[in-house]
Length: 431
Image: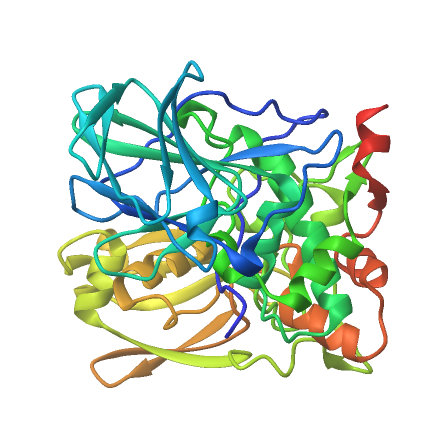
């Protein structure tokens, strides 16, 4: 397993914790749902625990029109799965291996039990006593989720939101974002940045009716199935710890591998804030890049003329009249601007935009970053680069290298976010 290549666009600025959305989430289609028990038992909610609403865009991607809900496990007969309407009224309570199906019904939803009885509501909330509600689409493996699942519908399509406590959410995010067998101090650093990011990102999907989504647009979230002992320990040992700057949550980012120097946020994202702790840092240990052992530290990709035309956004004409050249770089060497074509048919593009468009045309994993050189190739160009991801903030493979060299999670975070401070969330909320 590798850390994610493309990670975290900066969240909107703000000095206070974002309000949690209280609307329904968009989704896509229908799913099959089952109750999971055993090792998935959820701990009791701690006093003052933050709660997130996560839009399950991935879970709602099946093109079906129904969902199936069935308790399962060694104690299935002792567990109850409840379906309640948005006003809290109980619609169905299932035990044992009873089956129910949920489907969109106009602007509402309908739940049908195994006896063919239908219950309708504008909003349906599924929660399990003593276990989890798990989502199954098609014939795939059930994905168990902590907390509760909320179903609404619009235009004949289901919309699904998982309401989950922050620390439970992180138990899924950390192993989804960083290999669980990384050094414990690197995992602890990842837990802290993921917690800080989640709280800062609460406004990203406010218009959609939830706080964060389950994709790399926010942070990868795969429910309780992704949880692992190593990453659970990292979350628990850093519980409530966040990075702050100037008495507010820091606006953090992270990525897979920086190539030896992280990028300034203002250089990568057009109009990005020039934050002092996201100005870019030299990332080395004993003269070598901290992320030197990253599998994708060095990489190459080939771009044909036809592909360059699609990257340019046209039909290939821009590529045909000239070539591809780097016209501006950052001090460390990351590409800030490229020129595609030449003469009157040429135009420029930011290095980050070029990297993103290449990923869309060539496929993710081909063009890994905006730190590269361009050389003529057979029928096009060969791009040779280093690092993976946008390069802003914490380098995940660098965190691993630093941890293996003896750095603590605090030391890792100070290296990548200089000037920030590590504080308990409750002390920040009290300010």
